[in-house]
Image 1 (tube, rainbow, N blue to C red):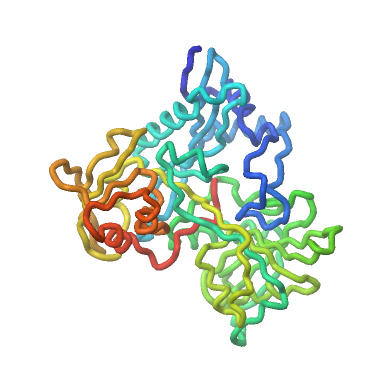
Image 2 (image 1 turned 90 degrees about the vertical axis):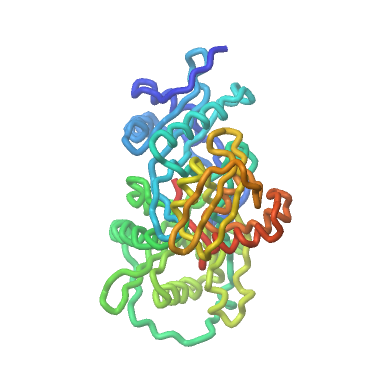
Length: 431
């Protein structure tokens, strides 16, 4: 069996695409309600791509922002994946390049032959050669990507609330205005709004080309009902400072009827946040609201007279991070306090990335130096370092889970203090 790992030519792109699950209409997600899907069913299945779809996909695969990689077995493409070139906001509100792993699949008849590991190694090495010190992905299963050095770094909640429980603590006079608009207006607004949000939100991803063009059909429920409605908030000066996408799907089952499903929501300030949720949680002829892909530190519950009203129905990891260059990654981000720690990092896939690193960090900046003669304060895997990097995971929790080894008493707490962020990292869009 001859195995070759390499990018595909334009002539090979259709064969490459036919390996990917979404092209074949095969499952891409766990068979249960997702944290980023507001419907009651499991994540909707995909319809197999048409020939017209494949022609369009070929142009995308061969674009400058997509880097395909394939595994050829005896000349046949048996496995495929790709990297999209995006940016992620890291602590310090700095946007850095991220190699986004996406569209991954191995034909069922070629599984358990190490093809995915070979593809992943080739893609990560490509990222390193391009100067990207971070890679990321969204995992369809939680058991796959830790072996390649990825760790979950951002999380999402899915929650629902009865309309009768959505009473706010204080009266609110909106200085701005709310308006329902069509999809074309919303698409223009969301493009600008997302750029404003990602400039300050740790963990947020830049949108792929064409992201907002399909806004009207994005996140369609499994039964195909419920067109998207677009709600905007403008401040007193007429500038858009918040938006939401919601659906009101019809249901034959009275138990499922009357649910307003929020699939996207952004607000730049408290007034827009309060006004948008005020309408969405008290919409006429509904009995409850279901919100998907929400941050784990959503402040809404603390605005209500009944803080128990929002019931979390799913928590899910979203962005998984992979540190490709420990020194550059640790020097790039900002730190909350001043401290010096020596970290012993294990990296089974990119051997030169592992080793012992001395991190000398403060709010003014950081240096990270490879050391061999110093004792380590903490030992951890590169995957766990990825989970910690944005400040959304606790080193103390990982210590008590047996994932970290503490060689200096209190080192895990000190690392948490260094990495701490005011808000939990969060990304509303993916790739």
